[in-house]
Image 1 (cartoon, rainbow, N blue to C red):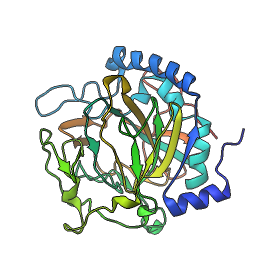
Image 2: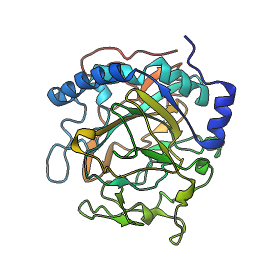
Image 3: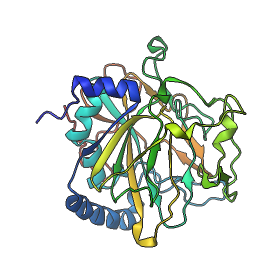
Length: 312
């Protein structure tokens, strides 16, 4: 079946910086998939490619549970799902790689995530993680395509995603600046409990006196199994979790780019959020088309030796 975006949807994405929601699974299907996936995440962590990662205290640390698609089969299937890949290909062309996945979990009392944009993803690590070819200019706003999937219900009460349409066209932050990592600092901004995983994203503002105009923000509420697609350079955030422990919110993010983009250029490790991981076993996954550039290292198999499916 053809899951590509229509011409009108592509125009809307170019104007707004996001599109969706779309249904990947029914809520019942997603609940079953997430229950099985959660067990694997807990029992098979030794297979994760960063399971031997070491932080400054010589403790195992996978930072933000990156790239579990390498050892959990349902997540490998997820990043290659044609309902996702064909829509992404509609936006950035037929030759597509997935370079990172990560979980975003919230439970009762958790802070919201502050407003931010990510173009080079050097915001926390201090090292550029995405590099578009110089000839591309800003047509694609640098950055990457983010596919945010709700593994559980995402509501305003339990901390859903928020976006500011159209803000991907302007740079409000300078990722060449550095942020100080203070994981124990609780930040209250405009009366709302929110931060950026131990950092204060305001330290990257181009104009220190500028404040995001939240009157332009909209909430992205999702049922389990729905997903939304947006440029990482779109201003986005999340609300704090004001619900109960039974209303846990789990989002799973896949990050996609065309194969001409360099991922983790000239670096062998990622150091951020209080942890450090080696990229020795890392590789992008080709999810559509072919690699004509040779700019990235690719993995064709997961940790168990199962091939990644290419979704042409």
